[in-house]
Image (cartoon, rainbow, N blue to C red; front, side, top):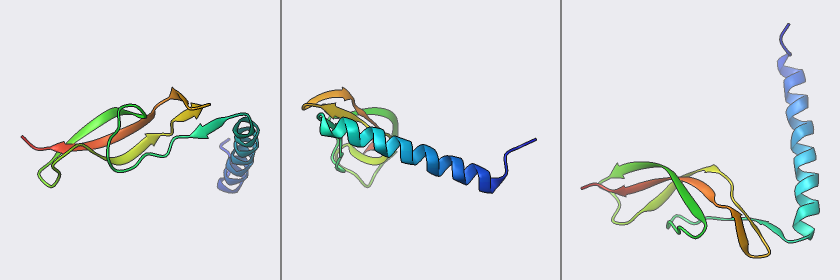
Length: 88
């Protein structure tokens, strides 16, 4: 038997709550979520997919696929992103 939608929502909220508590504990000790801007920076982000566009003149981030993190200013996992690149 499958899990009901209401039960599934409860599990999701509980998991999110646990994640937030753990993140808060690590944040106190120096963990930071990397916030990426529209402009791509390879120091903090890793491209997982490229889309060509005639509307951009430089590589720009259009979607964050997976959040990245720094620990005491050292990147421990770059943010995984989808970028738009100038059409050739």
